[in-house]
Length: 270
Image 1 (cartoon, helix red, strand yellow):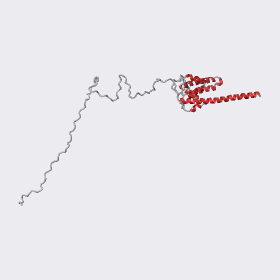
Image 2 (cartoon, one colour; image 1 turned 30 degrees about the horizontal axis):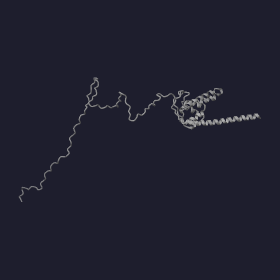
Image 3 (cartoon, one colour; image 1 turned 60 degrees about the horizontal axis):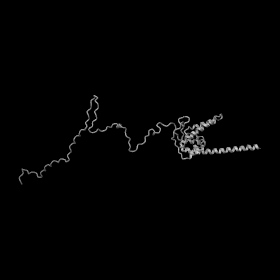
Image 4 (cartoon, helix red, strand yellow; image 1 turned 90 degrees about the horizontal axis):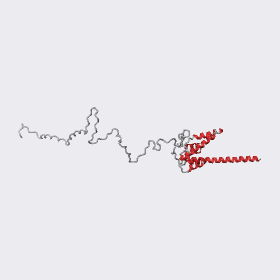
């Protein structure tokens, strides 16, 4: 009888421990997902649901930390599949170290010093809560990670809705203006031309010669030289005489015919 009560008490105690662990695990998962959602929002990740999907949210965390998100699957797969031969713990430790590296890079982008990764190592949930709700802003323009050019560790993925993080070495001419860009000159300002430099004249244009100036003759080559064109054009012909403004007078009228016929000399006078 005593052993029965002992076994029942042990089973009840184990059940309480399992229940408490389950509740703590659920609460920790909810808080962690909530904090990740806030951090993802600062980083410009679209879709708050991404922070609530198990494993996938850790992959996004790695991606924001300049690490390949596929490392999460490699670590989990190695831990689960190789635990039966005793080397699964190695993958679990490697995944924890990579998680520290991702947290370090994310902390730098959230304006945190590298020493903050110590807090993540001991109390990851507190680290997530501070970075989620403080006034820090996301700044991806930091020095690329030393492993960025590594094909295994560096991030090479492009996922829709997740900003691409800068990777690789600094571009050629780092610190200079982007290629093909020139800052606008102040209004009314023209940069001086280099000394001894004259811009070429437009094609087909010749500046007018100055009065009294003659260009030096070309060196003699033995070929006939065409006559020089006259410098003054010929005068135009004189204008034709103006047409008369008054028409000529008409000829005089002919003499009027006699109204009385002349007398017949053969007839006697009256």
